[in-house]
Image (cartoon, rainbow, N blue to C red):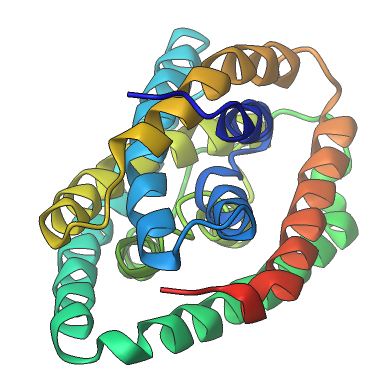
Length: 264
């Protein structure tokens, strides 16, 4: 297995961003792989394998720092698991019946994600509740809304590999504002592991996964994860919020220009 150092550098960047903000694996990696010449189907499948390995490491570091909100995690998982399974079924159906339309579908979904990222970044910047470094007053979170978010994210991740961080965290900020932001990041990473497992199994069976690409990405991401997690508990919340919004904007802008170059 040959290590591609361009992919390793991508992995380092993604690992750092993901551990600090909860965003990165799909929203950054898949577009960058396509930009580097990887076919969109292979980019999606390989990214799922890479994302699972990286987010397991990130999840463990957040568990150690007690930044996972389990009351939110199990509610997300109620919808996330069936959503991921349905998404795998949709992906398999499209792969076998409408393979010529998969690139168009991915393009539409990526544009939608880019718009959602820009809106989420704006909401984070303007949300006064996130501008102060204050502890959460309660851990209450609505079960139905969280399950719906999990279901939606599970479908998106299974089809495009995008959404485990870029969609989950902004939506969590809307429905669970009483939970501290850094705890939502840890919860987001743990939930990503839940939905990535069935998604990866499905794409592996479809032949979309390249272990060599995933390994190169993983080699770079592991040190990046530790660097990002180091900063997450040391920077003020207002810095954390600004960095998160910045990541969302950069990812959204990065998604749009490369869409015409996506090839199956």
